[in-house]
Picture 1: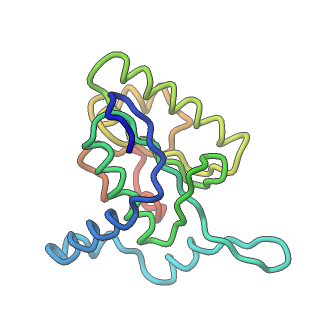
Picture 2: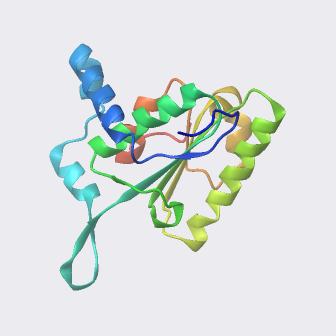
Length: 178
C-alpha cells in the first residue's frame, strides 16, 4: 500500500477491474448517455490493432499519471476503464504508450507546479517516443483551460475534472482540443 501524500504519482494498471466495473455500472444506470461514448466495433478494431513487422499486430497502449488527491486516483481509474473499453492496453511505462493522460491537481502552488512539470516531461515523448496523443485532465485543466491551451501547444486535448468519460470521444479522434 502506498502512503497517502499530496501530489503523489500513480501509474495505473492494476486497478483496471474497478474502472471497468465503474464504466459498466454507468452504462447500466444511464445507457442512453453512455451509448454515445462507445465507438462502433469497426473503429474499436481499427484503434486496437497496430501493424508491426512480419504482419504481427499489437494493441495501442495508454499510460496514466494521476497527481493530487484520492478523487483524482478514482477519476484516473475510471478513465483507465474507458481506455480499456475502447481497446487500448494499459502500460505502466510512458515511453511505451501511444496515448498519455495526465490527471492534474490545480489547487495549491506546489501541486500546480508538479502538474506542469509532469506535462512538460511527458510531452517530450511526443518527439522522442511513441506518444501520439497527450491528454491533460483534472482540476488544473478545469480551472485554467484557456491559459493551458495557449501555453502548452504540445498537449492535444484538455478534459476538465468532470469530463473524464469524454476520454472515449478523445480516443476516437472526434473531440475538440478543449
